[in-house]
Amino acid sequence: MTGDRPLPAERLSLVDLLDRLLAGGVVIAGDITLRIADVDLVRVDLRALIGSVDARLPSPWEEHGT
Image (cartoon, rainbow, N blue to C red):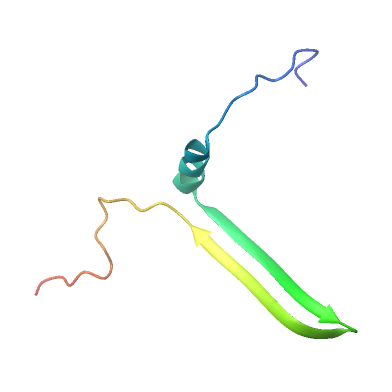
């Protein structure tokens, strides 16, 4: 606890937020089910991993030695 002093407010732009998220990576997961009378009509599962790419690393899809 910091006592009676409030924590300093930090303004963060959307670009800065995305930069911070991509620098460390982020995982998005979610499930949506549309159900009527205990019958599943539509089910959507979402799993995504978002991370940054380092330009110094070689692409795994490049052909090497040809």
